[in-house]
Length: 217
Image (cartoon, rainbow, N blue to C red):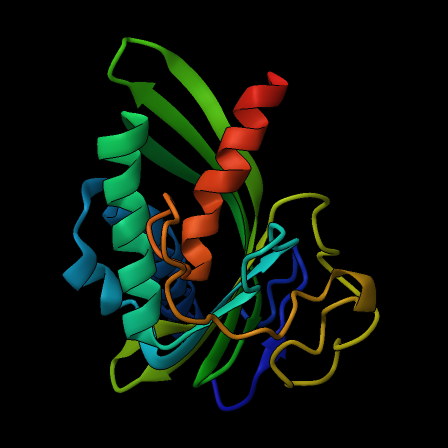
């Protein structure tokens, strides 16, 4: 496997043993990210991201940055969100990552499209659907391990799986439709008096979750 390939469902010409190993490795990373968040294992979760990783949400809730950068900021925001969910909301989340499709694979770059479903088990005994969305993950190989370099989370309409732009190119993010591109704002400092678990972008998931619950979705 010496070059990056765009993988089309059903094609068998590129399914040699080396590529099958790499496909298994990159999908394991995507699935593990949700499982490690649910179990609160943030030190291990951090090893799934590159040091300069980006995490973007589209759309970003009003008042929150659309982008979180660096492994430390991402894992810190996720840890704050996990703690907020447990201690303030009273919910234990479960992430189910499904419909994983490896859309691009090369010696050092991979892309995985997937669907996530988050359910919650509340301390008062309720069970509920908390959110639905899509991940588009760009992964880079570092040594013998694959890590997430760019995670894009879509909270509303799903992004196209096979957009016209980007097919035949190897530029990260080149497959993003203009109207769906997450914003480029960077996270700022913590806002005093906020009851959110920090202004890291990932904390905004709770705001979106509460809006879903209030609407009865």
